[in-house]
Amino acid sequence: MEQLELLDPRDFPLREGVFIDDIQPITRAMRSLQVLDGVRSSGLRSLEALGTELPLWRLGAKLASTDDLERLLRVQCLPELTSLDLEIEFSMVPESTVWKQLWDLAPWDRTLTDLTVRVVAHLELWSSAPARPGVRLIHSDSAGWLELEANEGGKFANARFRARTRDLDGLIELLSRLPSLEQVELDLGQRALMSADEQAAFEHALARIHPVARLVTKEQLASERTTFS
Image (cartoon, rainbow, N blue to C red):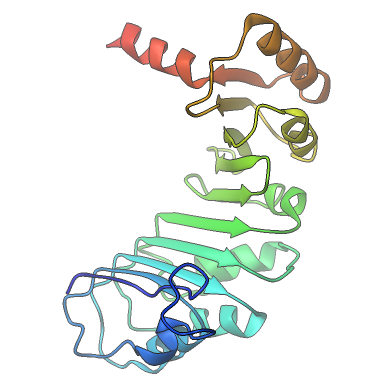
């Protein structure tokens, strides 16, 4: 077995109120495991207690408390981890010490190249925290799905937004809370293309809150890639 996803009962009703990682511990027998997703408190306890190294390169975990974060930072069995995807389910101010813990104090400080933090609160605070290039910050709400990527200067300057609705007022309000935007990539999904008037209105609103930010639609990016190739 190379890939294991521990499902949330809200997504897959195995048994009411029971998480799969509550009944499926991570064991030393999983010597071929490379990808592990959906880990919660019980799974983190299993990893923390495991003395045998696993060849895991990707770990996805949902942290319900600071105890879960501290437990994750004590895991020693993942010497080859390069990708860490965290969903933080509690309000936590992103002080620089948090990033230092995740990058420098954790056992994977020399191997980790991709850190994704999925946040449900304090987006403007998280987005202003110092970050290494390649770090991604993901926020999801009723308006859509927003991904911020850190640039070489350690700032979350590039944004990709996949809209769930054509009402972009919520996105404008969201972008107004982000301090260092340079480029906004907008993806309206399967909906009709943006009209010229809609795009002009959106660009005007964007320029008002972020004068240096550039709006790029999914269609423009596809056209630019075609022209370049």
